Amino acid sequence: MTHVSIQEYGVADRDAGPYAITTGPDGALWFTLVHSGRIGRLAPGHMPTTYPADPGGQPTIIVPGPDGALWFTEYRAHRIGRITTDGEVTGFEPPTRQCGPFGIAAGPDGALWFTETVTDRIGRITVDGEITEFPLPVTGAFPSAITAGGDGGMWFTMNQAGAIGRIGMDGQVSVHPLPSQGAAPVGITSGRNGAVWFVDIATGQIGRITPDGVISDFPLPDRAGRPHAIAADGAGVLWFTEWAGNRVGSITPDGVIAVHDLPTSGSEPHGIALGPDGALWAALEIGTLARVAP
Image (cartoon, rainbow, N blue to C red):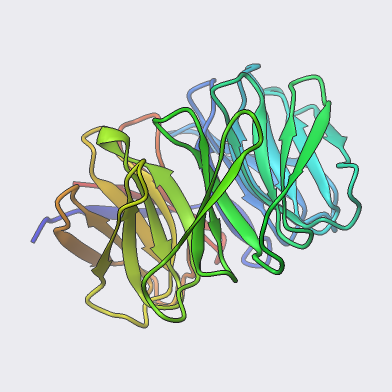
């Protein structure tokens, strides 16, 4: 069993709801406060700062863009947001209204790609705000998280379709149904050797899909742990949060799993990312960030 140290850092009120987290181009951690409609910034060793977005907008996933700013989805405001490293916020509305954007990731083409959960579309936004939308071949799929694959495409989870999708830079979509009955994948990230890794919140598994569509499942010790998000560290190990299990865990590329209890019970871990300090950082909905270091 790998031993890790876990420390929590308060960054917001309990009601603010830290949800997703990423490392920005300025070497700080940036995170969404899903309930208070704010974006937070924490440079390790310093006090946190928060910036107002839309109080009811529900900022969800946040990622660094190719333009030196951070980009985020606003699930309830149905917008794509952009925040500079000094806190200036702008927003862009997709052509399809009420689309429920959730996942977002930078693509290999210098644009950002995002999911539209409600309208079964994948969106693409350039750094100057021009948006194109691509319909999925499945209705009611609830496309959720998205990541850039090593094969030049964007890979995304289809939470209600029990499938993983891929969209090429030409907008062509392929769908890979998952083998487990009742599968409901959420978080997704790229690993080494071109594989993409995802978490299945419904069946309590970590999954891996190769560029040619071969899927492997790795059951968690606690199948009721509700894994939510997943990220790769610098050594090729994948780290994930267990929302209901109050844990963070890791899985090696060959499928060895270790799990670690968080210090505060009921902390509701959501997003996880590799931090600027080489540790993993998780967003806990109780108003804290957890630093996880071997």
